[in-house]
Image (cartoon, rainbow, N blue to C red; front, top):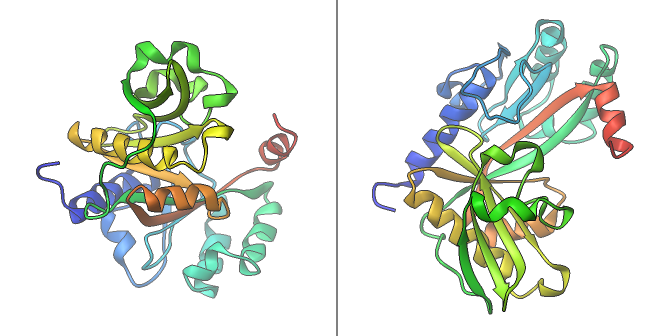
Length: 260
């Protein structure tokens, strides 16, 4: 991991968030809210659908909102009314959601993102054999069982994985997708009867180290109510870095609630 520092990792993440939002990295360090116009950028994370109608990001200092013009006024009013931490929680969040619904949108995605903390990141052990996997080994693994580690819709982005094997049976898989130029996102799955043995954290930490060795920044995403996933991030050597919340059209949200 020669050349890496926590500050360099954070700066790379902020630079990527700035690309995604259409702002500058310095905007995340200000004392007050920042509202910018969302735009399409080929350097953005591949799974983002740009331009945003309304997307809020905080690295803890303030909130940066990336919006389409019809949503600017309501977003500015919301950010001026509430403090950064409270903008991402109820009951304040209902104020934004109610205003968005009048324009055919709802809050849809709410997540916390984690970056590795170098003095906490280390190779962890588990009772099973590790194997480093690449795209050629992923072909038969695009099933519901491994749907967090691999993404069938964006197979071309799945670049690296670490599997845990009990004999010849794959029992856990951490995979990463090259979602943008400098950062690869980690996902993890473990078969139910192999959980609570340290498999998830061992695979996640091992994959994070492999990613850093390749000159990329690993990042990890979890809904803040998904305590099992958040605990895995912490055990694996990751720490909270930024929070993000995204609005989507009403029909999109309704389809998700119907399982589509």
